[in-house]
Length: 556
Image (cartoon, one colour):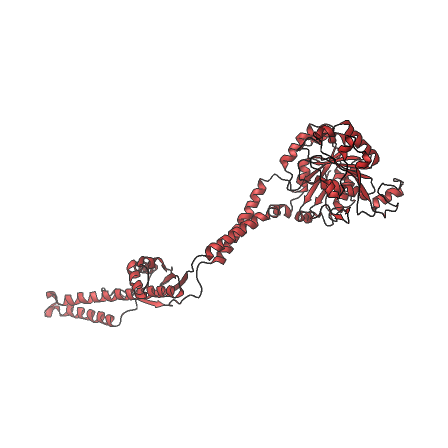
């Protein structure tokens, strides 16, 4: 029973849309927060003051019905009757308001709360003193108006009863009882007139506020920050949903349908030069040792001697992979030659800090010999690893590896580099010529490993002759650059090129965030190899010897 190798979702997989597009969240938050803060900070200050008016039900002075508890409807009706332009005109006159009564009424909010006998008056103004004056003015006017209304009702009742006393029906001895009742009622009303009932009371007078109620730029900016944060995260996940780029080793392996021979983490200095010598950066030592080991284990009986390193499109890091893979092979005691055959855009000479001179095309035209075109590039590799030591003890090496070693691995090693030379008019024809094959055969005989840096296969046709010539082809895919559509075009292209032996793919530029979650980089121990760990998936899975037909069957 085969083990289940399906990768389980990890927290980093769910957070990847955020970590890869964090700049979108930052832009949304900065623009929204800064814009909202600037907008409200330029608005004039508004101060708010509030006061309360207590409302009671004194009863009906005319009918003599005693006071009853107030209801929510009584309080609401009272507030509605007093929230008028007439009340605003009186208040405006008393507090010397500069605007119109309608403007004043627009600055006031009169509300009543359910289950309470209070009317709340809230006023807004440009100064603290004016806000308090408006609120207190409306509160006092409410009390005055309600008391005046109640007194007016008493006065009207008194006038009515006094008129009733003058009626003929209430004159004479037979109407004495009726007159006594009217007089008794008049006496009670006049007493109420002298000592009026408490109809309303102004409580908790408003005081000038110490700070403005609006605008609140800080509060509004924080609210905008939260909204922008949520919106930015939503945008990140929305873009991720339609993003076709490959972002994980699992996605690269699935899309390419070939084994991942190594995962290379991001490095700030991928091509270091130390003291004029090419160096293998500390971030890259274990990743490229893993690629080297997996290439050697891919075909133990017939290991590849000539390897073409290419990519589907430009910008995926194939030249950097060639450079550092060559140093990894050199470290293991191999005689390594690098041939820059990206004739349209050569870059290895600068990556290796190699001097100018004749190159591959000069040899093809007979203007230079192969020895003249080969440049010895010094490295900072001063020792041979345990793998080479064991090989020597077993008699697998003659002790001379062409690197200037003194036989004890103490001298500095070097790699041989063949420059491109002048660019020809027809690169595909030049690289497909018999003379080019003869020069490559000479390099194959003189070196253990020949690494060829070629042009991207989907950009130009220069690489096609090299794919058919080489023992193996190594593709480079770059995280968040290589897309599924590009890989599909690559599969369609390789299906039309017979006898291509694809060894695998190097997944390049794994981000620091993903590298730490996978265990790559800075120690580089992960599921695709660490050091000389031969239990990596490519070794376990097998199937590395993929020719054109085998690759076509494994297309996505």
